[in-house]
Amino acid sequence: MKQILVIGAGASGMLAAISAARCAASVTLLEGKEKPGRKLLVTGSGRCNLTNHSLDVETCYRGADPAFINSILKQFPVEKTLSFFEEAGLRTCSRGGYVYPVTGQAQSVLNVLLLELRRLGVKIKYSEKVISLKKTGEIWEVSTHSWTYRADSVILAAGSCAAPATGSDGSGYKLAEQAGHSLVKPYPALVPMKAEGKFLKKLSGVRMPADIFLTVCKKTFRESGELQWTDYGISGIAAFQLSGLAAREMAAGQSGRGKQVAAVLDLLPFETQEKLFTWACSHGEGRRYEDLFAGLLPVKAIQPLLEAAGGRPSAVFSMKNSGEFEKLIHTLKHFTLNITGVKGFENAQVCSGGVDTSEVNACTLESKLAPALYITGELLDVDGICGGYNLQWAWSSGWAAGRAASGGKTV
Image (cartoon, rainbow, N blue to C red):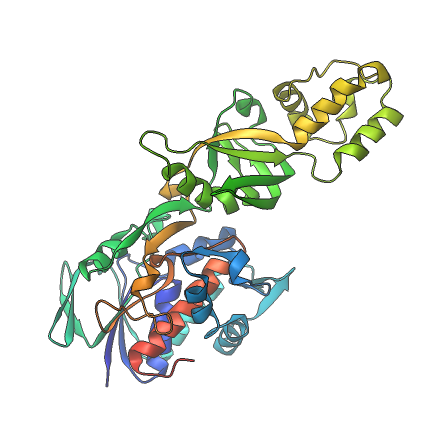
């Protein structure tokens, strides 16, 4: 019977262990923390958005090679993910394509995974932090502070360095490097962005709809959704989606602060500039600017945004000064925010970067440099946008690596 060690009891590690055990391998799962699935429990604010019915590799994932990502996702797509959890006893529901457990609790997802691991006889060793791995002949030797484990194959599923409090402390990168792999430098992703502006403190806590445009390598990316202002910059899903790109673009510059990145915000995304101006001309004569924006912007945001856009909240609209008001609307629909950085790994949901996918088999996830070593999940240079896409990558990559490591078929 083939002996397999899985390093890391996160989402991809647990799926890898289950997949391998279903192919009749003897599987031991090593977890550095005292409990499994700690990062899984905080996903989706504890509700666990475990996948998404709307999945397009080109738009939902970042990474060096979309073909590599697609090769793995097609082996264990959304439909198979849903069937797997249904068979394991988890009922799910879809909300606009976003899939959650019907309980609304990530703990339910973890529970069914642990039950399946137990049913299959997978041994789970907790508080076993792996510090080194090496291959002697045909056997892998994996050492913790207390023991050296031996196996025919190793699946490295130790996570990235995002949210280190959950166990993803970047140690998996070091283990991959011990095996000879190189890294695409990791940066925080799905994380708040820092910005310049004295007005930010007055806006802190305000939530509002917005479109955000970010130009990277001469290509403009757009995200729409809720924007949350903070005293240091911007947060919310729309900002999260672009944060990894912003971090990479700034780092791509020369020494010092790197490239300067500007985000252009449409703070009135529900209407065109022309219609807003026509509406003001029809209904605004004699009204103060701040009153005209009372139904367009959150109350707390009116004064600081109008002032930041160069307007005077107390100014009175008239057809004589309509050009001034038109310019104000234009500025609010093209509000330029200088991005100075992103929050650190401790605030990030995932990382942009990781093990170079050109060094990994695109079908099996076996290392091209170290035979019988498989790499999954966030360790690889693959990251998804918000919406269940990162967990789907974890399920798919774990499943593919488990089957391949155990000698099962891959498709």
